[in-house]
Image 1 (cartoon, helix red, strand yellow):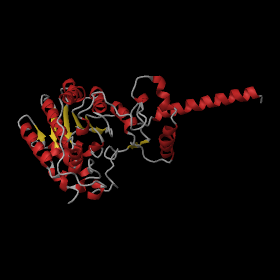
Image 2 (cartoon, rainbow, N blue to C red):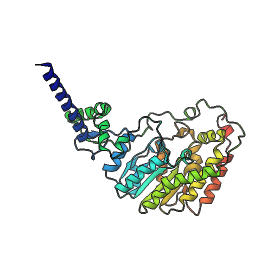
Image 3 (cartoon, helix red, strand yellow):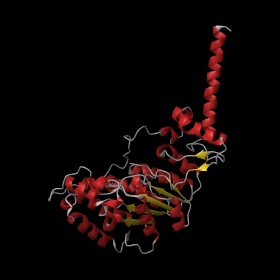
Image 4 (cartoon, helix red, strand yellow):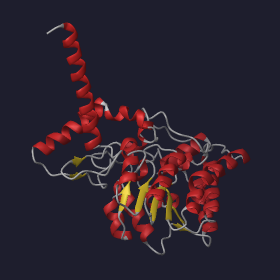
Length: 357
């Protein structure tokens, strides 16, 4: 065989191999970029930023649970039972209001969504309306845009082929059952995590007895309102038949102690009150304020760190949302009372005693 013929055959073989890999990825499609899961293959759910977009586009559902890492321990089976719905969970750890808002808009545009559940993280309230997180590793924008040419980053991705396609093929060859990993398990980090006072407090030193607190400035208030308008309020107005359940997470008193120590506590409390006042104008936004749930917030056995709680707290949140008369449901009638409780609890709490107890 001549060198020229060998080279031609090698190039042909390489081209066929590449085409085969692309076709195999497109057909099996572990990130659901092109279609819903295929019967006979088992789809593992373990990559939020790569799989959530496809889940939203191609799964069947009428409810969506989303938000940052504080929503990852929700169980859709529990939500389905309480709300008589079929939910997907598409959490985005560390996501901004814009990132979560865009995915909710996609979901509500793709399916007839009856309910959404979403965390409203206090730390991201006062932020640019277009803020995005690019510090969490490479963002797979090629899975989100409509450009078919950059799909090669997915179709010829060695990680996808090695970590997803190959194991899926092996399971199929061995005759193991197909299906999709449960949303109860997807992104749920609750099991095997160390909880308690030592895990939460760590190396923190006692908080000072008095720290001057910053006020929410007019400029910050306007920035917050723009963030809410674009990424929360506009969704409720655009999809009036969808009930949007939003909640302020029950961060531990240590988390709020950190805000007290850095002087941003009063500003954050005011920002939450501003957010509530704006959302109350939308009849299809149901607001739940768990920032006053002192029973949970002061029991550090509920937490793996200052801001992340175990799955039993996620269950508690869903159960309260399903009640008709939950004491955490913030309405026009009790908003002023909730704000007063928020101020009294967080601004007068003895943070200087937390570490020394």
